[in-house]
Image 1 (cartoon, helix red, strand yellow):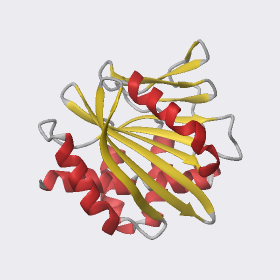
Image 2: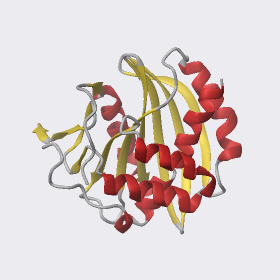
Image 3: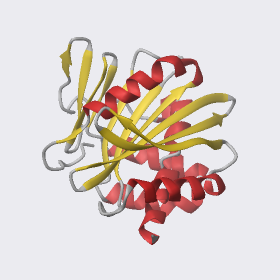
Image 4: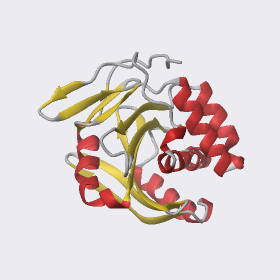
Length: 224
């Protein structure tokens, strides 16, 4: 089960995303050279590194740029210095961070989506992942974050580990809905960070992302 500790470590490192949402100016904008977005009946198809999924119109994103990756790892390391090693791995391995999307219509209550591939063998069951996450996360998370729910559920025909985390960053309250699931021979994690004020609309959006998710082409190189 040691490899699951690595996966959990990456999740902890990505808590820096919530800090970036709380201070959105720290996250560089999506560069123009990212893949174009296809609008389908009010929905946006986000195309990342070997993955794609749909979100409501207003989200923009795609392949994470090097600047975005650096901003995320910088925020994570500020909050959790012990996770600097995971930040180094993230910057050096484009197979981990697959997509970032930001809702540009919610400047006051920002939302961000990040898709990662967990460095966990696909032979590991969702039950094992859920058990490890629920047992370890409460003691590993800093006081600003609290795991409030952990379960295995279905989104359409897909079984996922669903984690819900509450966060309070500099007086701003956020939630994280995290879905971990198997796609082909890989295990992916979709983390959706949103302000408490957006909670009512969040779960339908989250289910849309998970239900439409699919692995596509090979991984491409991140842009500057």
